[in-house]
Image (cartoon, rainbow, N blue to C red; front, top):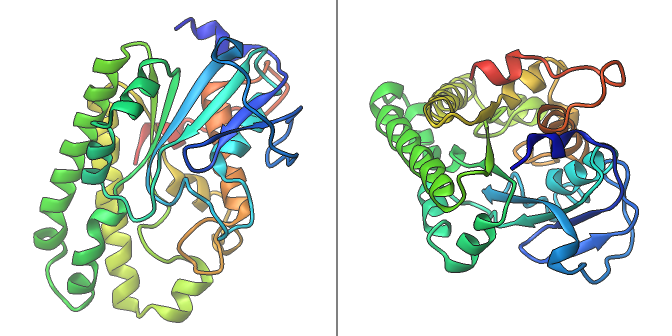
Length: 279
């Protein structure tokens, strides 16, 4: 892929929430809404993006918003001169093992062969079963360590499979602000032990994802550092304290846009290097 294609100015974005493409006519800002219309033909699409992973990408009714992939498409419509097609193959409750199964689906493989960018949000659900055991006092290293090793292995294999299917595809592996509840909801519903168990799971998740991205020579985005830089995370989260609010989706979408489609010098703030260089 010609990298210069990622640095021009804009028009229309095609997008998807749950694996079905819809068109947003004239979307030129994150979160822009308009009536869906029939997608343009394949020959009309310039850049193709696919989302893989868990419920972070699915949005649904938790935030009453189209989700970060659609927000991202709206943002980059102001920066690229080609249409963008976003296909979402993420599924709620998915683990890194489920991600590998999705990558063996023939339809998904066909999509990846023609894609320019793959966004991966997977790994937090791998730790769900061990979370309560660590909360109850079990060793985090003994409970979480093997899970983190398996997560890194799975994401590394996923990156290899994506590049096997499409050596030109760019990949962004996204870390988590928290594997579990955060913000005011966590303060209200979680004991101190449970908050510590969540923080340790998140740390090991992000380390595994960062190492997989580093070893696979692909981009990593730290949403933990991104959210910490904004102070209290509560407004970035949905009412359950676990998933993203509309604002949380928009914040991540902006970081992805700044990472992959930097605006002209002086027109926007550059992405903080710390968001990509450590877990």
